[in-house]
Image (tube, rainbow over all chains, first blue to last red; front, top):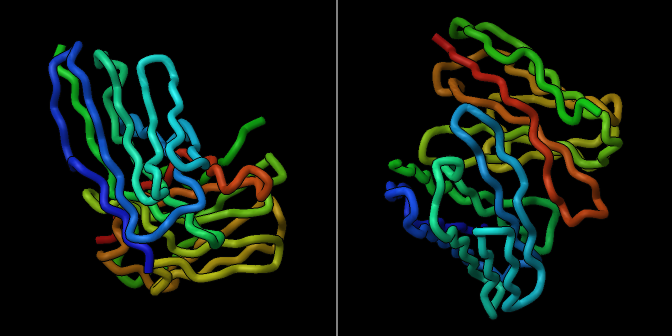
Length: 110
Length: 113
């Protein structure tokens, strides 16, 4: 079955530093989604990438989809305390199901 | 719009007890899902439904049953709870035309003693 690897598992940064999390799938994807879960909260959809090599930005967040449609990254520029939480990638193959990565926990020191 | 509503929010069970978790969505979504979330393991799919009256197994279905008698509701049942089922359970729904973007409920925190 489809395997999804997300790294790092955990990152602790100083406020103002950048942060990147990476997601790798064992199979070619139809699309990839990113979700954010605040501590004690539920996952909330951030963005979906569909096209090979696609890059999308949301303010300080930059999302990339690899050329082979098997990997993706989320980069946060100049982290703020409001960025804390767990960031999940969710990989959609050519079926009905999403497969979630294990998530990257981000902590920000002010 | 309430979105996706889960009840209860918290529950403590003894081993062997049964319970049902209720998920309701008011967005007219076709697809509904049940996930469990355990530390370091992300979200694992238990069961899902692509429409009223249909259900299918996900990645970790053992020990759980589901029913989707109405489009807006998706029930998750534990017939004989075990300590290994201690977890946070999330329900989600999605619209088939949005390439499976999922909307999550607030979660149910279940402890089995």
